Amino acid sequence: MNRKVTVYGYQFKDGILQADKEQSKFVQEIFEVYNSGVPVSRLKYHIEGLEINRVKLNDMLSDRRYLGNETFPQIIDQELFEAVQLRKKERLKAIGKEQPYVYHKEQFLLGNKMKCGECGSEYHCYKHGDKQIWDCSKRIVKGRVHCRNQRIQEDQIKELFMQAVTKMKNDPEKIRKITIHKTKRNIRLQAAEHEIELLKNDSDHNIDELLKLIYKRASLQYEDADDGRAVYYTQKIEDLIQQHKEQPEEKTFDKDLFDAIMEAITIYKDGRVVFTLKNGATITETL
Image (tube, rainbow, N blue to C red; front, side):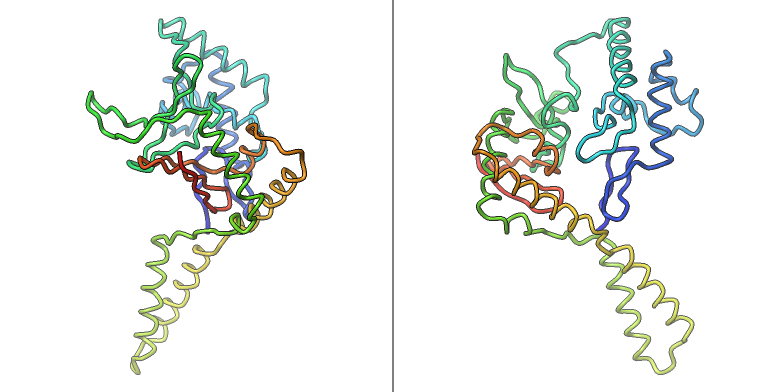
């Protein structure tokens, strides 16, 4: 099943995440123009065809995934990225909004993977003393409590992740238990198949109309086809877990393994923490 890429600049091709040729050029230009001294609010006047809103542009300029990692190909080099971060700090200081206690989600270990299972919003992180606390970003909306999902410490998440890794080591079959969610395309495909059957049963059916429906069904089947991503990541995750299993037993958090296999972490009010792997498999732990 095709998966939508939420990070601007990338696309899936044959089940593998790659830099999108056109979008990656925009990403590079955004970083370069901003680093030349143009503020975020003026970027659209200096980059032809730019149609990204100001909030997203600001987030993009702090997104470390553009530097490249196990999953994301590199689009921005380290020197330019660090120069942009320095310019952003200088900009905040110049306008009197330098707040060292405000953090971008990409600066935290868990990045943008934390989700609220109650309202569907992202979790965000803040520091409380020497602890990093994750909380639903929609807990308070316009001064009122909107979501009552629980807060969770980052250390708790790391501990639960390693528990999940132990489960995968002891029972590799958990990695292969993938849930494929039906999409709207399935409904359209079913409707097309139903129309084809009705026409076939009609002795006076129009052959041209039937051919159109058959072509439509073929197109929908192509859209709904698995792009190989699940198979690719299942094998990759199994290999990484096997490598981890062969290493000396450690209970400390393995950041490299986390980045390589984890797609999302969903927090629920009842204490469930659902780890979704990059192949679509899920493992549930409880606080």
